[in-house]
Length: 290
Ligand SMILES: [Zn+2]
Image (cartoon, rainbow, N blue to C red; front, side, top):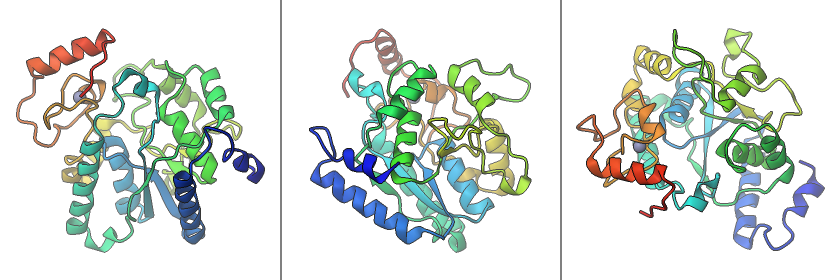
């Protein structure tokens, strides 16, 4: 993004507040300080996919990893009163994963830098419109579109935890618009030494600043790889569920259904009557507030 364009974002009623500007300045300074250190920036929620990405970069590829967490509104869910009810669970998962890495891989732990959290989401009509034009997601705002805006604003490339655009081995290819688009847009890694560097071939694509290292893997293959390397126990600490109830995963949401491991603290495999009722109401577009 040009300096001029960036400055424009600071103006007008919906521009960054004074607090936002402090956050922007601080992260700009950190990036400047980290330049030339070959830092791997990663969006890390504490979920299975992004945690696998962090572990792979840190433990397998011996990279210095700078995790990033977007606290602000990153999709249209906020309008349905459902916005990211799982934030505290994600935080707990990240804390437990960090502690386990310190214990299990003490020599690598210092290369996992402290998580940077962000309230401010840069606005960027060009990206929002370009992504909407591709018709990848049902809503105008989407987490990946938000991640692309963020990466462009700070002029960095960021790893994204997308897994499974080809599905599991032997199963038919997933037909969702996002996966189908990525299958054709992403450059397959040519060189085994650089398998993590999977990006969109078209430099003008609105998401060309995101890196998709695990897109061609699958959740089961990721788990098998982690088991072989001995860090599957860390993946067991991850949290995926969107709609936790009293500390337990709901077992009804998409994230629960696609999970290949039980959630921490799971004792039974079936959703509770409460969870089923809530899922029913959600599916009927009722507003449920926690
Ligand atoms: Zn769930």
